[in-house]
Length: 435
Image (tube, rainbow, N blue to C red; front, side, top):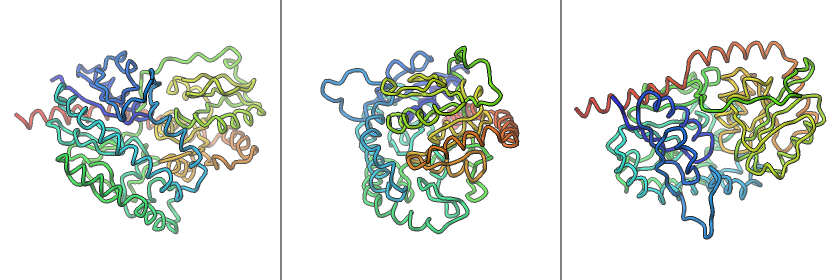
């Protein structure tokens, strides 16, 4: 039975790409897939065969022209980048809370638009990949599915470190102080948002949560090898997708000078994500340090590519097909976004992690403490720490063999089709229950 499935991802590339991957599988199975994405994605989703039913998260700026996809958050990150140099507990007030407030403002602004889209398309399943509630999704007639494509510490528990902290699992000494600061800096904003959510007819939110858990199905993207379920078990509505790697990226042809591999030099992929790469100072420092090495690099330059100068041992572009590049490289230097982290494990690649904000600290800490990579201080690393980390990971044949096995196991679990199948089953069951 053909379904209509509506996706509403957060506007950044990570969640949107996650939904594109799942949506393409559903589309290929004969279902209609609608994207209620943010306006800057206009024209970028329809070529896949999706219906674009776009929303504005804020009034358009006077004289604004066409935006790049995710511009809403690129601008926000550019304005707040100095906050990333602070310890994570200090970022709660000056970055995390303002980010949530921006998300809240967007949710309120687009609520009427979203209700109109739902009324027009009558989706059987409404899938949200975000960190904040949009009541129109949970009060609609269709079944609601939540996706967590951030680090799963977002699903809180007493025996796991607090989300956004980047704290180790075996040292609880700072956990209570971090949660107390979270409550101090978020409680009033959370209470006001919870009141508004209920005024729209949705259920009350749980303490410290800004989004509702689904009674139908909750999906989260994280490999078993990194997961926290031994310390924080989840109920039967939760389903782990060990990875969810989209199959829509173009092939990547290595430049001629990169095709012949030198056994003494690594091929490295450098990406700080669409948002992190907007920090031109940090990107140029990484490029300059790595230009002194014998290694070869493929660099994702991001939205300010024209402001960056590559070294002679590098190639790069503003946008690159990441999922077809990672399988070809020896290791990845990353900000620790959840998509990149899970994709690296999916393809069995070690990581050097330079977290900037949000759950990137948690991913960096988890990869490091599980010995699949090395976490460095993003703004405080010494040059030889970075180059030494590349050398060590490249030379660690035992780790690379272990990761080869991990990647094969994760690919065998086929999270992409598992996730699409769960969404499909929810829709079919919901139709059957309605009679």
